[in-house]
Length: 162
Image (cartoon, rainbow, N blue to C red; front, side):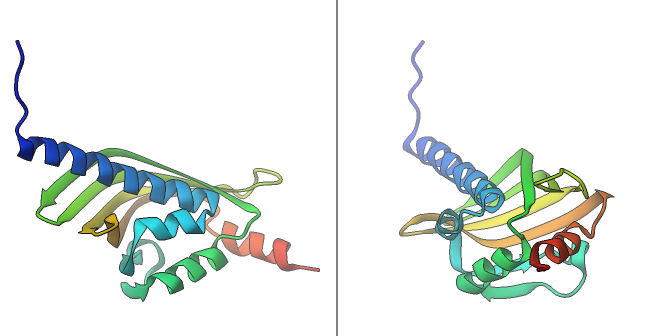
């Protein structure tokens, strides 16, 4: 039995696939420090809320500042591996919200020591642009942390010492 798919359903499926692709490329680009791919995933201005992990207040930043800050915060001697699961996508016109569970593992590349793993939930808001779907808001709700939270500071000390 052959069933026709409506144009609306096809558009929904194509949008959903594009959104999943952007969110996956985002985490993979962070892990690989691929700043040009990361740039292609982000809107020109981004709202960031990592307050459940670091405290402080949510931020509204231009893309160049986000990329520069993340480049400094993740030293090249720290490995990062993000895994996203249980993605749910809600579409409303030219805006989408993707929620997913996140597990992120951080470790010193040369030894594997000072591991820090955290888990929680990401809420990623995307907007359709002329270049496709772009992330305009990231909210991370930390639910658990295991290991040495100071891995970044420890690695920067080692990395930047003469």
